Image 1 (cartoon, rainbow, N blue to C red):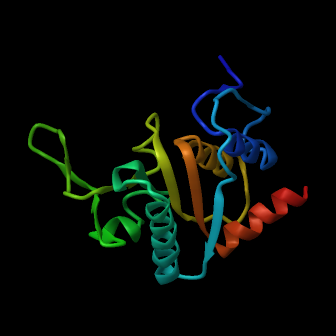
Image 2: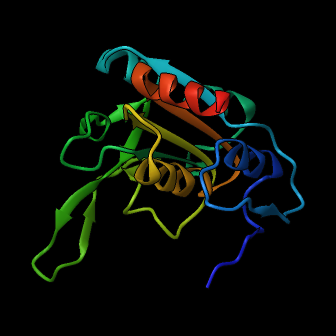
Length: 176
């Protein structure tokens, strides 16, 4: 079953999804909020990635979003994430997955801003999503699906923090 209707994401995010052709067919924005295009920020190394991610979070905090209104999602996943090894960002503790207890329940660190993996967060949403550690050389089907999932978690605003390779791949996709 395929439904092209999106009620959660702002129109501007849906428009960006369609421009980048992240889905096989265009989707329709049926939510009431127009929003703004997702912000894009590129980095050269891990230190810059943390800086660009922090800048995105700080910007949203300065706009008046509460720390609990922001989720930071790692595109890399838990095992390869540099971000998910950080205890805090912008002076706020990061609430991060910390393993499982003896009964198999998830354990989490204390923190005001949720930092998680893209796939663990699938099916959830938040007013603001900062999708970080985005890295790929070509915008293939797998990358399109992952960007789609990340962007559609946002109910109001989104930022994509990507390496220069991903930036170039997105640029090529926009030229096609």
